[in-house]
Image (cartoon, rainbow, N blue to C red; front, side):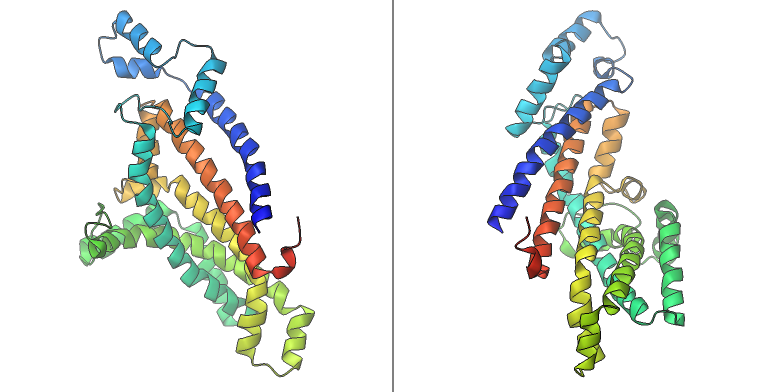
Length: 315
């Protein structure tokens, strides 16, 4: 396992470098000048020149990139052009919020999606299967922003059960923090649950038709043992893949959901940075998101080898 992780990390390094090149190059193609936004309304030429010199914007592009990536390797992602705070500090403030939202949404998705997919596959062709597929299709089709607004109108405005918006840190008041996060997590989790249900159903259908499942039934094992111990365990590999990728997407920022529920997470940080042409923040967020996706893929590969011992000897 250690050798496998080392190989994956060695592959990840050039991948991250390539991504950083694309992030830096595409950012330079964006319209607008961040210095103009920083200089205020007067835009004194001397001030503009001073700011360009301060942030090395007059340097050749390759020198700007090397300076940025060199700092990133040392944990310095630059300074926000708007707030003058270190980008790493801003990310550190927003990341726990998004992680909490992502974890809660993923728990909801797993609790709903995986059991529903297993039952749907086991009862293929029944009314339960048709109903589960209909619900999954609805979950994939309903836009998050519409569902979020409807939940606010019903649960918060009409029934007064949960806060309509805002965020309370988990460290300050755990119960209130969970209450403020339930609705946005449910909005995200239902969409993810539909995706997980479809993948779980497909994986289970393939496994339930396999020879070893028929052999387990022939031995007289109960259906519960056959489905859970033999079928579901072998169907977990594609489910793990989807789950890790979905978690990576959540870390990238559920922009609309965070905006609707006024959650100060990654999504709001990205939107504010783009509107203010705060390119240093945009670069830092995209780079951190790419690293998160790569880390989740490595984690998924490691879990494969835990779930399926036959994969441990593969390169």
